[in-house]
Length: 347
Image (cartoon, rainbow, N blue to C red; front, top):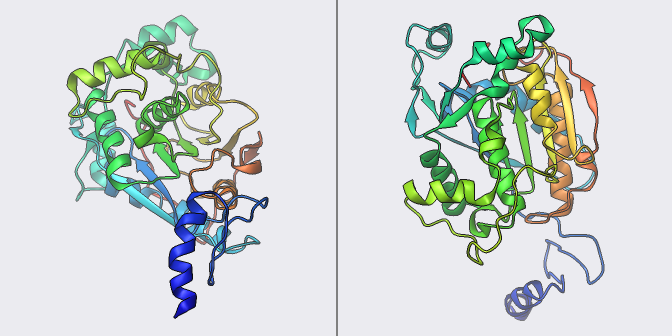
């Protein structure tokens, strides 16, 4: 009994002081030892693509998540578990109901609702012509599109990070990957610590660099419109005196970029990866198209990233070697069926 009383008194005091003593079965950091091992599951917030939903992305990533969890089980060191939190965008998808994208999603996911995070605008055909139809007419025109009606979605993501956190990483597919990139950039400014201080990495699946980074070029360019429409006054801790750029310098947050070799936005995905520091990013090219991958290489890269987070401990800015720059060719896995194909979306 005295042991447990002593543990109850000492642990909060010593841990809050960073002394790293933990009595009982679980252990934490020693006085000069490595960072603490996480005592809770590592948690990822997951953002679907244009016309998707939490349930659709949950189904699309079954293979990736199963393979990731299996790869983690084979890693040396402490056991690691992962929680995946999927949420819906706040807007009903604004696509043409007769479009190929809408038809395909209704075919594979007839029982689901369809949402978006923000509405894309821009003359794709003109932008594609300006680039000269490079690489066989791939959709490089996405480089020049913009987003409107994004404030409500960013507000929802930030509030979810606060109300349901802490989260160690944010994962996004397609349009959700672009929103996740914006969140990562905001986190690097040090603003909005209540929502973003625990984020340690971002996973970008089939993202696309439209040119939106030129509109969201500073903290004020995001927080100004956000405050005007959001339910919360998202203010940085020291007011607005400092207005850091969001994308002028490569993002240092460790990132994993999963992109398809046959994806129509492959070039734009590569451009999006260029927003991140090459020393802390990892790129995996899988043989599929515009969809979350299901191959072992993608899962292995994701598992490496997660294991590094577990080694560093929650809320640490260091993730070891997970961000080592690399490009790999992924291979499909027959044992776990890949998710249904996703159409080339308006993003």
